[in-house]
Length: 178
Ligand SMILES: O=c1ccn([C@H]2C[C@H](O)[C@@H](COP(=O)(O)OP(=O)(O)OP(=O)(O)O)O2)c(=O)[nH]1
Image 1 (cartoon, rainbow, N blue to C red):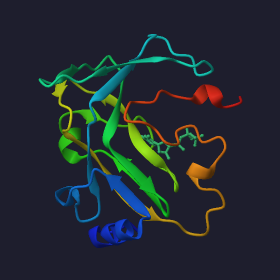
Image 2 (image 1 turned 90 degrees about the vertical axis):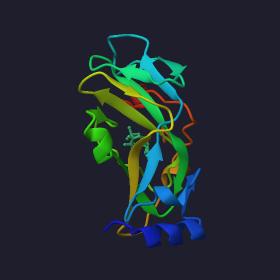
Image 3 (image 1 turned 60 degrees about the horizontal axis):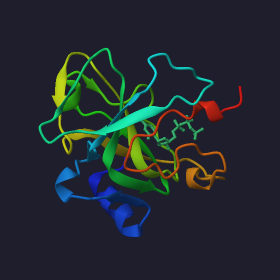
């Protein structure tokens, strides 16, 4: 089951879903459109190492837009800060971004119950494309959970991406023990 527009609004009134900034016109029948924040980032090294802390360099998208290229992997961020205290939020692309050949996550766009923060976008493109800050980039959908949650994401000791800021956050895989 996916929450409808009315249910999303009810949950926002209860405070179990927070989307900031919020604009009624961005609410679809069963989703909420999110926008590209002004910061992008790329990894400093071409060769990444899953055991190491791979650092990124962030830069602002200029007013006139910024061209993304297929051979480069970018991290972006949503303009929106969100909280979901009772539902599983999923970040999905939009058909209109997909039709421009823009992918906004590399694997699952699944969030966790209790995730609070801006969403980091794992951006890759199929052909050169100019993007702009504030453009619609994806949509959030919300799933109810079956059963009780013992530990929500914002209560987990080792949650790597809790409270993500309005800048892209790099992979914290290096914090995993393996
Ligand atoms: O495209 C995405 C997908 C998820 N998230 C956020 C929301 C989610 O709640 C959090 C953690 O995601 P996940 O559990 O998939 O990451 P992990 O690598 O397993 O980290 P952790 O060990 O902290 O769970 O990252 C994003 O910012 N962008």
